[in-house]
Amino acid sequence: MKSVTFKLNNKQFSLLNSQFSNIGKNSHIGKLAVEIAKLYFQDKYVMPNFKENINGVDLSVINNNSQEDYEIKGTADFNIAFNKLKVSSQPCHDKLVNGQILLRICDIGKQEVKLHFMKYNEDFTMEPELRWSVKKL
Image 1: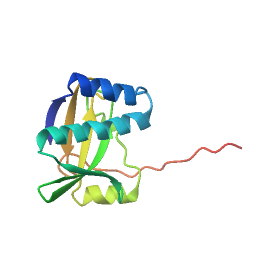
Image 2: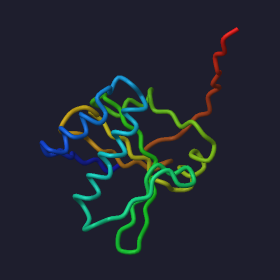
Image 3: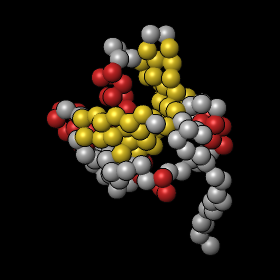
């Protein structure tokens, strides 16, 4: 597993906090994680291009005619929190099994975050769980 620390500058941190102020909401954490990943890759590469939510891929990073796809999962926890890490769809599962990187971003809501780049069968495995939908009577 490759892990890196990434610090948002004051302007980035302020802007993201104003756009995604409710980090108690999972959808805000997920969207914020994607935006943080984009900022990280903009810092790492010269003028990368991005595609979001194409064919079940959270973020595709295009740099120098090369494309890398990522499943991005954010958490406000300081650690990976494997017990909270879920993959919801079969297509996402299949992409991860076939080599797509799972990018876990920890400390969402803080100015300094930790990015963990993980590969299936090297850093994690997946176990199926039954999930049930609750419906009003």
